Image 1: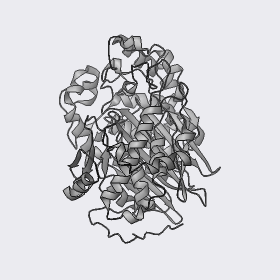
Image 2: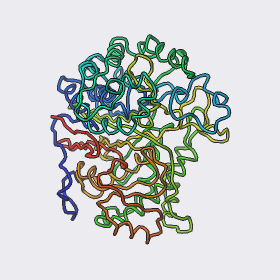
Image 3: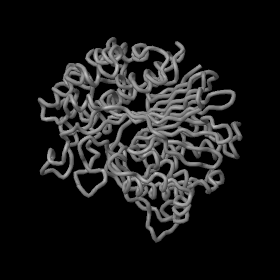
Image 4: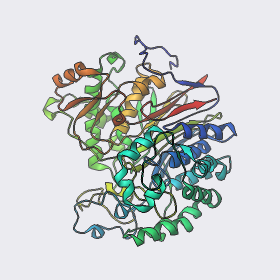
Length: 545
């Protein structure tokens, strides 16, 4: 296996950053405050899971427009002691009273407000369960940085300031939200302003002291459910008490000399794996400098994978998802043969719905590796802060269909189909992890992850170069309803025209380093070092020791 830094004939673009190099441990997150919190925990002797809990709890405070304790999460964990790979599903189920009759007379589930909240937030159960199994420091210590930022204040980053201004009407709509996330309940916070959230500090302190029961069976569950019931919501205290995070076997596929894993359904992790599986026998290295050729093959594979996602993805407790078939060599080989069948038409048809998320990762000095994808679904989720908890609740349940003929149809006690996914790459020779990677961005998540994996493994990019490189997006993200293929401005009109000549339609050139392409983080694990990167499209940081 080649672990060098050769660039296989590719010149380094001076606009790209350089990866953070560490020898003992590393973290990467879309917020520098969250990354520093994770680094602090590792410096205290904590595990990669401890660092991930610290990072994601801090993100709940400093990145509340994208993620938080009121949302869902999926984890991938490699345990160096046993060599085992774990997937932890911390997504919430719908309430016992969440039926289609609850939305009678509606074609779709409410997007914002109390009626958009029909699933229990699962993220906290993920923190607690991962920590129970793999934590070293006390849970309260892992939550301490988040508590300090919430109680004492933190400087508002560019991303939070921008989305506060863009969503000002939503934030003003609900008094509890305005009180929590607007200055004097009226104005958006600006970059550099100090924001405090004492209610969330108290919530996090209670979790640190009481663990699962504090959030799902105690005063927090009582406060959230009582508030929702008062405002026409559907979740009850019993729904919270019945929630649990579950350990599952990761989905996996072979990609050349590597094995790539992702969370299984109800996560759409198999989309990333299908893209890789369909392109396994393509000479990706030869496409260096031929970006239109790369995007053409890639987006056609993506379209097939999205079709399978939209056809099969569901909660497997309600409808089995044929993962073994969808990731089989024969199936992927058949898909590969059809990639350039022009009779099938262009891939730009538009897929999916809105989504805003965060991905973070950590590797500790024992070699344990963790990736966590955590989300509120839309930016600011439901838009509603639950009572005095200081927490924005997700609107993940709006992804359910109200059509009884659809697999992802709303039913009580059901997990919705999830766009959330992340990936971990293993060397088939050693069985050890080589890369932890993930990205937020709805439909962009699997595309960004697969392209970064190929950039690094096939084309010789460093981690930061792969993250910084121009990206493309087939489908929708960030709340837009645009159909088509969008490419970042650094590609230019020449590449766009080449794609049109290849039969693609609705190809648009957008800004450089566009937010629409999501935010990616990754850590590569090499024999003599760790190489980490964070996305310049966010406020992120890769760091370590």
